[in-house]
Length: 575
Image (cartoon, rainbow, N blue to C red; front, side, top):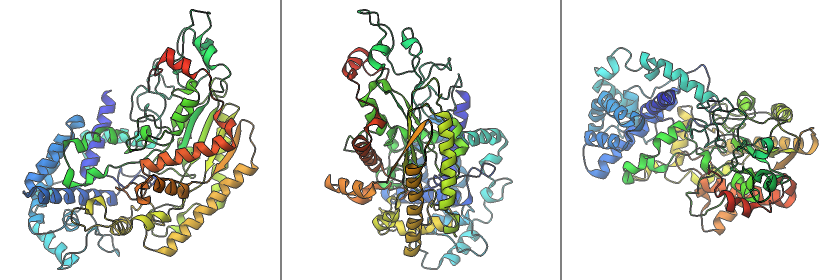
């Protein structure tokens, strides 16, 4: 596990130095740096803002609040130590600038974490100081021009320029560019390690030393001697000598669930508490190590493959748990091959991580769900970078051809339409972002503009004050959805059958309001872009209800032996 710990250490360093909160929807260049200048700028502004707000909440000094923030971080992965080291290097300059009433924007530009590109405006999250942004910047730069942090050799080159960390950075590049488990002893694409693409993402391996034992395979010799498919059902009934797998699962139409998606399907999540100084404590960051090693995703809580109990007040089940409840022989047979930044254009790059053997495994239900990245990008000329209907058809047909070659006969592929993201602006633009709630000084409109300025806006088309652009983006999304619907209606394959579903945001909103909620709660508050956990659960509910009503054969029949399986095998080894 040493190599995993090293990778998590670098993830910790990345978080503390630049906090890449809004990087999820922009596909990364594999040969480029781990983070862009824009992400570094955002991370600096967030951290300086939090320190400044902590000082306000506790009526104390900046130095004390830097120490307080570091004390809140876990010891695990050296997070606390790294924080103290960071504060030691940059703390004196931050203290000096904040004492001169400079805001976080000015501080981060003065320390070169934020950079003004030629011909571009000075990017800022907050309203400019009364003296003007340029004048404040000039004053701040004079204040820190002789700072050791800025003048020492290699001081601002980034952590990956440090010789001791260079190779580790290369390893984290590998983890970020693949959807395969990092810890997988037998190479069967399943793991006994939870994060780093382990069993939070795909069913837990029950024998990581035998590549022929993994979730989703047809049982070997009806699992009389061992559990070859990790569903927890194995052995022989002493009463009649029949293997339990044969007795309970033969002819039950067992199926696995595979999700090909983007950050929404992976359930990208930044806790708002990380950005709210007023209620910050040690408990706030207790799950930070897990989040970093999970790419800031929570697939174990997603509406597709989630298996953890919901953190919302409504205990809805994921599609996987509903499928398992329908037939307990499906236990652990899930794969979430979703990736932050995924789209129809780059999906094939990580499709090789899919695990399904046409001859040895059960059929699968594949959900293809790219809700936005084919129309979402951070380019200034965003429309020209959107996927065209012609390219969409070509990309999806390539993906379906791949699936037809790898999936067992009797499998299904459900093509999900794109979302209409105009609700993001409509619901959030005049609301205060978690970082701006204390002083009521940052709205989502300001956040979207800042993200656009530093060129890391995950969706320039929808997260924009330009109504015409928002409409154009939705029109393109509808065109691409029409392509998916046409493909599902007209294309035939030997091993897979196709279905199409619209993304049911209108129905989700109405149902959530019926339960007493408000529509803005269906959006992740920290990034103002992704579906929240509640939205993910509601989408799962509508998916299940529609498929069960119109195409029940997709889900397989209900297993009459479910109660006997539970009585004999309990939780079947858990997840």
